Amino acid sequence: MRKTIIAAALATLFGATLASAQAATISISCGAVGLELQLCQQGANAWAKATGNQVKVISTPNSSTERLALYQQMLAANSSDIDVYQIDVIWPGILANHFIDLSKHIDKAQIDQNFKAIIENNTVDGALVAMPWFTDAGVLYYRKDLLDKYGKKPPTTWQELTETAKAIVDGEHAAGNAKLQGFVFQAKAYEGLTCDALEWVDSFGGGTIVAPDGKITINNSKAAAALDLAATWIGKIAPEGVLNYAEEESRGVFQSGNAVFMRNWPYAWALGNAPDSEVKGKIGVTVLPMGGADGKHAATLGGWQLAVSKYSANPDIAADLVKYLTSYDEQKRRAIKGSYNPTIAKLYQDPEVLAANPFFGDLYETFTHAVARPSRVTGAKYNQVSSEFFNAAHAVLSGKTDGATALAALEKKLDRLSRGGRW
Ligand code: GLC
Image (cartoon, rainbow, N blue to C red; front, side):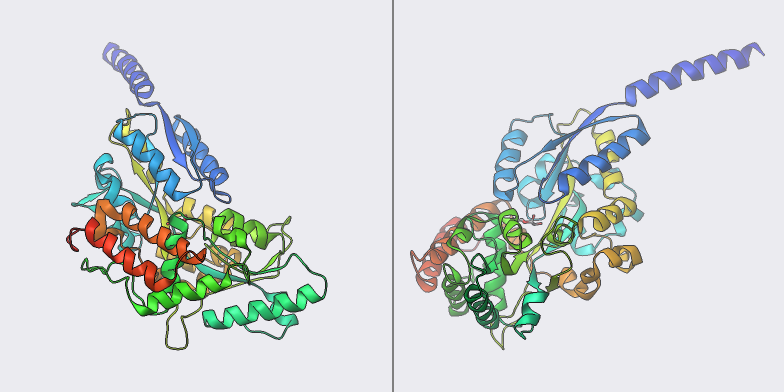
């Protein structure tokens, strides 16, 4: 009897101590593009409620380029202010040293549900430095109503897109719809332009800047032709302002009914069909056009992962939050509410996910065969490679130079940066 009472008392005491030692406040950095911040907050709150921990959601700059700079400062200072970092698919090679190995915290079965290519991308020197959260690929949005009105089909080549956009804009301007633009995309000098320009270049057969074996391939006539064609859009089918547009600026123009075509990521679908959207029910989504009849469809691979900082005071609890947020159920909720593409293959067969995003089924191949930026081969130097590339593309788009001249200079810079292709 006595023994049992003592045991019970000890258990209560021990249990209470354990519980209080375990409860913690975990801070997580989230993006704020589209519905990201809201969905992150909801997911984190649900985890906090279920586990008795607290969460602090930290909003970060929308631009991937600016977000990386902020993270690099914090991580270089070994700051414990952020426990969980939302990281871009191109960053594992740059930031791996600052993150714990999540394969020691998350069961293999959950890891194995994800696309293998993303798990491989996030594995550096044998350590799983980040769990996939959502994937991305560039897609073409178009106004079904306007294409129908002018008897046009969604374009299969960039040349056709250029002509269709011009024909519709000319017709609409003549009819008094003065604000209508032909095509909006991401042409500000930042990581988003690297994504868009890589799509143009690769769709023309101009390669991926640096080949997987490290060879610098960007200085070729197909790549130059792709950039030269894009430059003809500025001030014609695209507003001059596009030179300063990121994702959200493009979406703003398209969603208010002022563009025929938009290149963006899947998240723009949920918002474009929201009750307050001017273009609700009028949007089509398809693959990005090919660079000419002998070109190919190319979509840049994007996406975001969750990583736990080595400098976190509570890495085990932080990893538990990552496990929760990247789970099947949470990815499903985010796909339905915000059109964030799951990284779990099975979710592309889920009827509720497909009902909310019919193009997830139609464009499955696009999502699983998207073109990777050369971040794997260039490793820690990727950010410099990308900056050189988007600056070169921006110079061509703004008419400061032409494709061939810009790419010859870019090749020299990349050659120096890599000490002759030895990344
Ligand atoms: C999207 C992509 C990301 C990319 C960024 C560029 O967020 O998911 O991979 O770097 O856009 O703007």
